[in-house]
Length: 295
Length: 224
Image: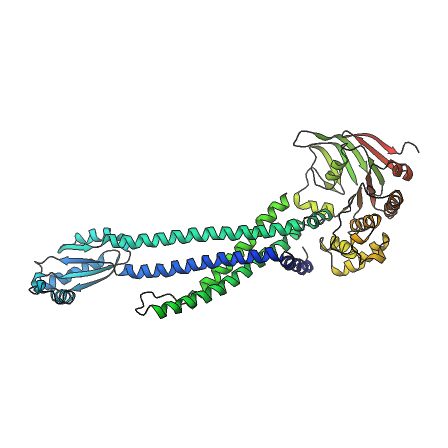
């Protein structure tokens, strides 16, 4: 294919978009709708993931030291705890500090007024790197000499892990389904464009046009539709997300939900939308062109 | 040059369209291919243009061996063979000029070449004054001239005309045949597939008669 034909082929491709105006409009609309839903779902999943991650960090194991150990012996256990894998942080809490916390937690409750520091044990608050390994780490902690008992909320950690997994699986499924829908719509638009020009294509073949020459305008058409859809969807997503963030900030005075700023997601979002638009446009047109050319 | 050697073409449905066809058409020849419906004429055209491959035997067209031609070579084979059909197959939304230019454009010709070549070919077929008309605004004979111009514009070494006068009255038919004769005089091989026995007799050219997939006669028209 000569370079001087490229301009002609591009022109034909762009012309096709306007020739099949309604179908092109429909294809762009469906692509925008699908990409906005995909984008919203991705951002929602990302935010939920971060929130769950933050909540997960609050899961900890309490390691109670044997009450027969002296203060110095109790503190020295911290070194052994830190040698284990999967330990992010371990903090020593003395009996006295534990009592202060206890009193703070049970203020006004006369039933606990007689509790003394000696009634409590020295302890370590252990934060893990990976909470899915909480049970294994807990078992390792119990084997350390001087550790009396441990307290770990496996169910809570597992619950967070399950929520994260569900979010990931649902996101992937929704994204895959919507991408297929967009692909089918673009593919159909290009198929219609090819059907509309079937006589021209037959003549092109008859006079010796190469398949690449015949295909290119349709691929340009599919690519352009995909990219227009991606750009519009990206802009819409940005506007909607900013609006939502502001609304939440107004309503949520306690800042229970803190959404990531869109600017933080700008590069991955641009890359994702561009890739999705490109994929939907090129693959969508390619499938129908291939079928048509082989027919 | 077209060379068929013992060509058999069977379709998947089981019917055999050609059953051992051997024939040769030299460069610069003018030749008629005649035969009743279903005799195998269309199959011969499809074999020449690479739409079909022979089941057995060999087909050589302008240096290409059709029995082993690669898919990507077929467009280049077709550039050496101009085809004209009974139903013209023109693009209605394009003007006369654009229809012809389109054939050049799709094989990658430069705009300068197109601007030079199209008027020359339109003059050759007598449509130089109708360049801006659309096919629907023209008579059947003119539309067939346009189809011939399009077939000629890429300077093929051979023109295959499949029933070129099938939709035309006798006078226009004669004009089209005269035009094909003129093109042949300029050095282009011409193969005319036709039912029109009167034209075959009138033009007194080599005639290959095919029936039930077999060549039954090959030579000058018998009445001459």
